[in-house]
Image (cartoon, rainbow, N blue to C red; front, side, top):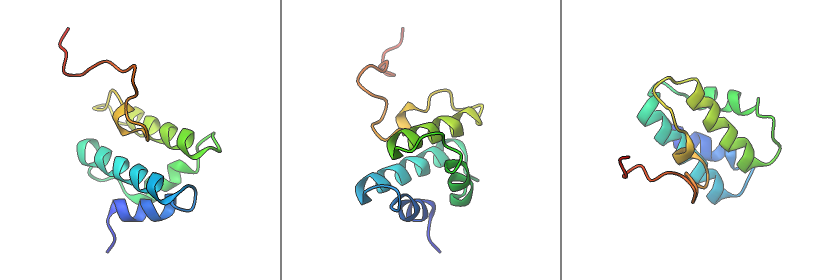
Length: 96
């Protein structure tokens, strides 16, 4: 039985290159591990079909934001984006 990462990497591979697809799949799996242990590939792919973007990277980043918005425990989805949080994100190790 394939795991979440493998199922999503295969599905995302139809939309983008293999490396990007694998990164995206691993990021969703990391989100699921931290915030939603019941998340399935089918649920992710169903939600991905609703994205308003044609570009895979934008569509995926929308997806993780949408998954986070549906989960009250996740207040910042940037770590799960394709590029990660980005260069202008606050450093989570600095306590203000």
